[in-house]
Length: 171
Image (tube, rainbow, N blue to C red; front, side, top):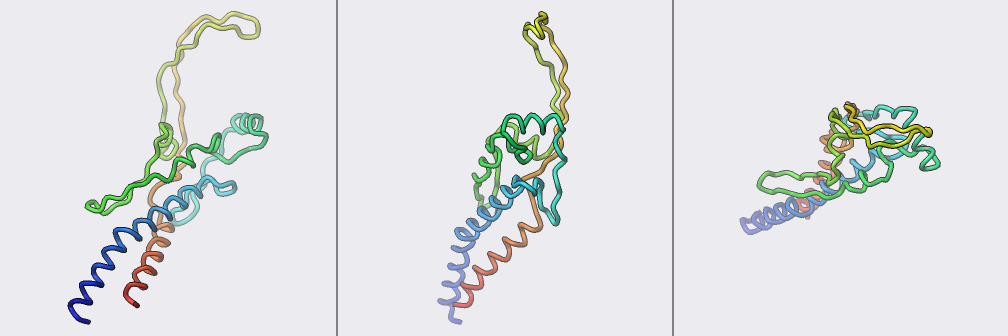
C-alpha cells in the first residue's frame, strides 16, 4: 500500500468515525432506550432484562380507568419515551450524550425521594368544609432505568461499526 493510499484510508476511517459511527451510536442507543417502554418488557436491558418494579394496584386501576386499559409503566402520555432521541456528539470528549428535557425524567431513571410541603386550599369533601392546611409530602420514586450504559447495546454498536470499517478496509 502506497503512502497516498494509506492517507486516503485514514481519511475514510476518520470520516466514517465522525459521521457514520456517530449516527450508528445515536440510532442504536435511541432504539435501545425506547425499547424499555414497550409492553411486556417494561425494564432496561444491560446484560439481561432488569424488569421495573410494578406500579401500585391503585395506580394500575387509575390508569385503566383513564386509558381504558392498563398501559405500560411510565407511559401515561408517552412523552417520556417520545422525548428520547435528542443526542449530541462531542468529538473532543469522544462521547455521544443522550438526555431528556422532561423535568421528571431523571428521578424516574435513577429513582429517589421527593420531599417537601404542600398547601391544600380550602375546599369541601363529601359536603363538609375542609380548612386550608399544609401537609408534608415524602414520596419514594423507584428506579425504573430506561437510559444508560448497556452491554447488549454496546455489543450491537460495536458490530455495526465493525461492519462499516470492514467495508472501508475491504474496498
